[in-house]
Amino acid sequence: SADLKLLEEATISVCKSLVEKNPQTGNLGSLIKVFLSRTKELKISAECQNHLFIWQAHNALFIICCLLKVFVSQMSEEELQLHFTYEEKA
Image (spheres, rainbow, N blue to C red):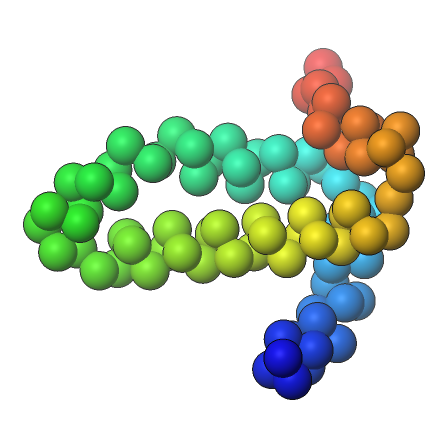
C-alpha cells in the first residue's frame, strides 16, 4: 500500500544504521528477547483490559517485523547469522 511505502522510505536510514551496528550491539536480539520474556503478561493484560501493554506489544512486533524485512531483503544467509549469534563480549 502507499502508506507502507511511505513508512519504509521514512525509516530506511534508521533500519540501515541498525543493520550495520547490530552485529556489535545485538539490539535486535535484545528487542526480541525482551518481547518474548513479556509475552506471558499479554494474556493478563488482555483480561484486565490493559490496553497500554497490548499497544506496546503490538508496536514491538511491528518494529521487529519491519527490521526483519530489511535484514532478509538486504543480506545473505551467512550475514543474517551474524545478527542472530551475538554474544556479549567480556
